[in-house]
Length: 258
Length: 198
Image 1: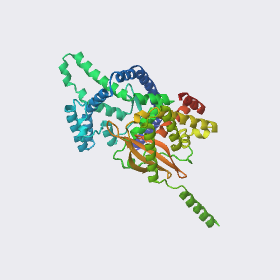
Image 2: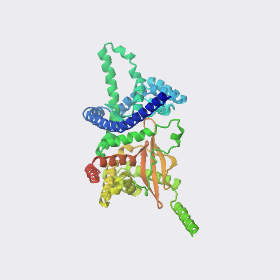
Image 3: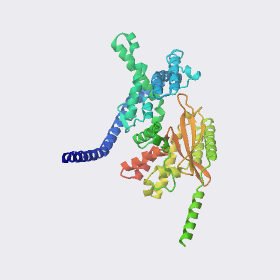
């Protein structure tokens, strides 16, 4: 009997110690994460200033809006399989079917997705991904983290991105065999991926320039906006979450003592 | 006597509760409709100089946005410790910076329009959200919610929420974070914001 009590008290105090250690660590790790995030944000910004932004500007200079739209459509069509799979995982079979239809029509008649023929047929684009699926399954988002090169994210978002990338036909790779030599295959694949990133960056040129020119703390602004934007994803089957007021309906009154 | 006092007091309470009249949803929606229409006609689709557009926008912005109210929220707990001059300076530079940033972006709205999706109640009785969306060339339409406040019958916008991102909340995080990091120096924030003005 005594032994049992000893064990229980040991476990209890052990747990208490552990949980207080966890609590203490949490605030430490919060500030550690924050300082990592800021550092990584600065590294990313420097890389962006020297590599991505000049590439995006150069890309804009040598292409017309028509060409850029074809390129953007091509990459967005490659995301259609991930969208189809995830609509299924979310139990939305009709949307999944329409994604499959879009991919089939646009890849063939739309010339590898460069033209969105399917939209004209009533198959409207309705993008989703693994991140949204996990959100609907009530998987918590985790803290805000800045990923190397990829930028603002959260653990769930990162897993979602990786999953979607794996469902991208460009990553399957069999058709690169036509190139024969390994280096040709790799350069084609990496070249194509790089074009995808440059195309994405080009669309954000004005937005990010505006942000850095009008903000006294661009990192703080991006973090706040990113977290708020993600809150709209967090509507899982949880009843409480659905009854909670919208995140943007915060107290906003004259009498409020801020 | 006690009973009488209680009666008078509860009467006063009831009176003050009705004094803060709930905002009229139809009026709020009509107000935002009018505002976006004016904006699109006068700024986006009209063929006048950039300077004239900025002048028109400034007028619209000052009339239809309650920046004194927004500024107070945006400065967060530092509003209380700020001197009257700091408060006025902050509101002034915040106003100018907003006008500068938005004026540079009129062209991005070319060919776009707002679709109205009704209203949504807010926790505050004198405020309401007017829900709109802007169809985008690619993918889903962008959601834009206008938080409208009724101040003695005069309607004004107090926040704009784009894709769930509140502009007031974002500015508040940025500015209060900045002041905190610079040892509670409100003056430093105002100086840095002034430096952003062209």
